[in-house]
Length: 72
Image (tube, rainbow, N blue to C red; front, side, top):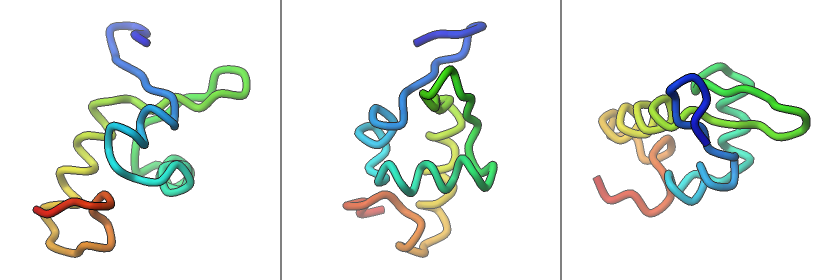
């Protein structure tokens, strides 16, 4: 879904794209680690914010923050 030129994903779609569990994504939303907005009862995650977070998490070398199954 595109809103104001930004690409937004449901939490479920963001989980499929990133490899993170939906509950982990919700925690990241609560901690303001990724950009998100709530429309009615649905949380939407900004794609670029999610991808930037995942890239940064992979670069730390700490596997606890990388998506599940991430090899790099």
